[in-house]
Image (cartoon, rainbow, N blue to C red; front, side):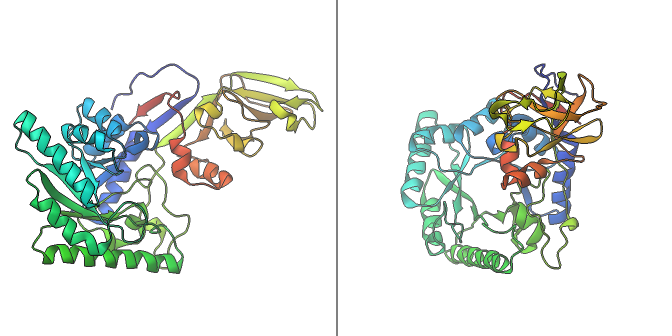
Length: 388
C-alpha cells in the first residue's frame, strides 16, 4: 500500500499495516477456517486510525468490525465501509434512528431497549418503505458484571426479538472478564462463564429459536481458551500487536500464537544543548546534572500522549542506544540525557516505542497499566503514517 501523505511534524506514529495483516492471519490460523473474525476498531482503532485499520482488517479477511459509539460507526460509513458493524456499547435512545440508518448492529440485553430498537426500526421502515429488519445481537452477562442479561433471561429476550416484525436476531454474545489471566481461579472462572453461555444458548435453541452467530472470545480467549471460539472471535489488543497476558498458562506456551506491534511512535532531536554540573532541567527542578553533560530536546510531550508519569522514569532509542528521559515531561516537549560525550546529533531519529527494542509494554510496565491505554492515549495531533 502506498504511504499516505501526512501532516508534516517531527513527532509521528508510524502504523505498520503489514504487521497488522500478519496478526489477523495469525489469528485466523489459530482458530481455523470456520469462526468469523470481528476486529474492534473502537477508540480510533486503539489509536491506530479507525478508517485505515478497518480497510486493512477487511482486506486481510476479517468479516466484522466493532465500534463503541454511534459516531464511530458513522465515521466508517461516511468513508464508504459497508461491512457488518457491531455496536458494543449501549447507545442513547435518541441515537437509535442513526443506528438504524447506519445499519449498525447493537447489542441488546433488556426488554425496554429491545422494544425501543424495534420502534426505531419500524419507524424507519414506514418512512423509507424499506423492508429490511434491524439486526441485533443478544448480550448475555455470564460473569463480566457489565452490559448483558442474566443467562436465565436469554430465551425470553431472544423470543421478544424474533417476534418483532422490525428486528432480526443475528447473534448471541458474551464477554470474558479474566480470559487473559494465568491464575488457576481465573481459568476456572472463564470456564464457568463459557459453561453459562452454552447453557443459555441451549435454552434459546430449546425454544425453537436460531441464536445466529455465537461469539465470546477476546484476545485472552483467542490465545488461551480454544473452547471459546464458537462462530466468531473478537480479538482486540492481539491484532494491534500485544499479548493479552504477560504470562503463559500452564501447559499453554504463549508463543503458540503471537503478534507484532503495529504502532511505532517516533520523533527527532530538534536541539542538543550543554548543561553544566548542578544545573536543573525542566519544570520543578526534578533532575540536576551530576556533571557537565549534554541533553537533547524532543518535540513530544503529554499533549501527544506521552504520560507525565514517565518523567525521569523512561528511556528512548536513539542511534541504537537506550537513553534516559530526564526532567519533567512538558506539554509539547521532553528531554533526553545524552551524556558527557554524545554521538547524538540534531535531527537524529528518536523511538519512544515500536516493534523493535522498546515497545508499548515498556511504558505500560512503568505506569502499572495495560497496553491498551498506552496506545489509545496517543493524541489526534500526532500524525499517523501508514506503511506496508
